[in-house]
Figure 1 (spheres, rainbow, N blue to C red):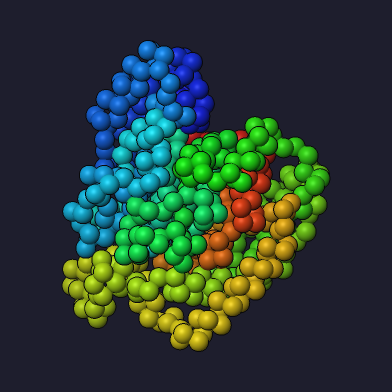
Figure 2 (figure 1 turned 30 degrees about the vertical axis):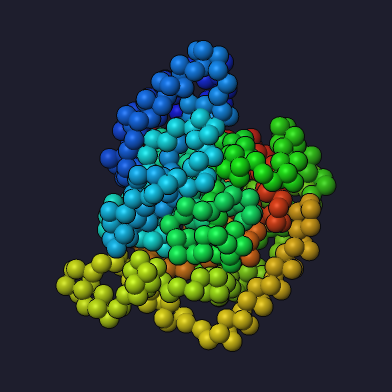
Length: 486
């Protein structure tokens, strides 16, 4: 049944409904794959294999009786540990939350279960979801399935790793700075940061201290999103539709266009930014810039007009993202890491010296960095105004028929522990989280070392379907996700 590991979620669902394969066979194939790879990559950190097989048998019984089942009948997935599943850990990788269990399913988990999806387990994150490597003091370090000496990224790194390893056809992650897009890029899969209003975020650990009655109107809703990571581009749109609860009629109005591969792009303009100059971030490696150029040429070959952006257009990405997050979240990082209680960073530094810190080194440095980069209220407002001006510029530029292509990260998946040497390289993705523009990471094949290459595609707000149309073309031309060699 190894061929099942190369199928997309909805292809598997169709096969199950046609009785070409049973839910039990599909779930078993993916459980066996997880068992084969997880000791090496440590992506899945809680398991529900017995429960999943029981659910698969129940699905099989209903199918044999001819009873109608959901859109994801018998299809397995995993869920990021910081997205609540009733009765399962909700620590977000923080030692201060160890032992905490979710009291109820998040809304997005409820929607997926209603469609017959079967959860195989939870996946790892960095401490409090704040770093680009998925490592914490509860579950340890997750590694990249293409090269275990490399990171799968963060904060949805466990999802990226297990989907990239072929362990599940899709998974659920979250993104507040690039936390879906970086793991997708590093692990050779598709990952989408949706327009913020589409998918409910209730049940995410980061939202616990936000007024739940007004969560959808809160400022944090514009920055933090929940979205899919998957191995097939054709799954992106229907997954978002399910995860949104199918309430957004404007979004669903574009569904018919996605049933076909768009090959005529003469009505589109593609803006390229292959070598962005972003404050505090490294310049991209040549193979990264060349990948963006190659993606741009693909659209040009299909009729699109190509225009290059000023490489400094996103120069202030970090300052804008940090100011927007400061404005949206009244709690400091030391409070977030301390689970509501502000940590003494002096004490944590002392604990670090004797090897007893409660925080990982990246977590400690993030808290210290917040102090170093602290800005006055006046400075924050000034930077936010710069962000608003850039947002208006992007809105006008993108309109209803334009996309931006640029790197997700300045290099391929870095070696484990090395991101601390260039700690702000994640700012290739932050600006679109800060300004709430939808964006996808799309695989572009493997480099000479068999490490995934990727392109980031950005569209206008509420134009997610255009990004997915573009992802499907690149998937067709470059072959999309490729199973890593064990």
